[in-house]
Length: 325
Image (tube, rainbow, N blue to C red; front, side):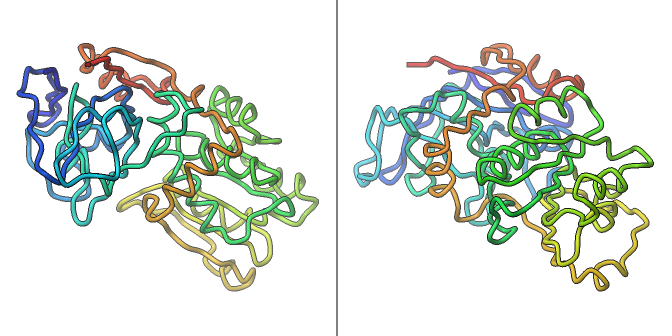
């Protein structure tokens, strides 16, 4: 079978590898759609957050079809359309253990969730990034139509936050300097967009909220300056959730605002425990994030797809497709 492998620092190839065998408690899945994430680029460049070894098959944002199940598996059956979680205890699927960027791959049934019939393979491969944005709205506590939500960043996670917040009935303001991404946020339910690099940014947010500031601020850009600006744009007793990842960055911030505004601030990683909830939310609201996919390429062109995701700033989400039987 064909598989995308990261074989060393900045070295990606499509190789022929054996179809993996499964144990009694395992499942063989045929890949159908796989997203390339910024974390995959960090893996390729040797900067991932937990230990791993080359070669490794990436791919943690995926949708696929169950082909074979072990003798002890009864939770899924051949023909089931599934998606799967990627944080597996201390291991990360697609990072410390090989992932879905191959024609076939091995999973365990406890990782898997059935993909609703109303969702395409492309939509299924977007469940993982959306679950992170959705989880940010869950952690914002009691998010509803009374809230004005300010979202920093209109990458895949931020756009998921926008869509989830809008589907909950919130008024959404997006802070994004790139006009194409800001425009996509408006299509997904944001009502107002501002450039967070503009000197007038905080005043713009205050004006749009009649001086109150944002009730909820979700930082999805991972930019230290945005994390600092979030304190200024937040309203009194606002809830702040940091889902964008930055390791080792610094920015000057008015830390006294945390106390004077009685801010609630929390950080989150991933989407633990909310996948069934996420899928029910997507099925019920009919939120469709497929427009985030700016490029689809076959698995045989996976190295081109990785390079596009790595170096082309116009890309939002690049997907690999496979039709292995």
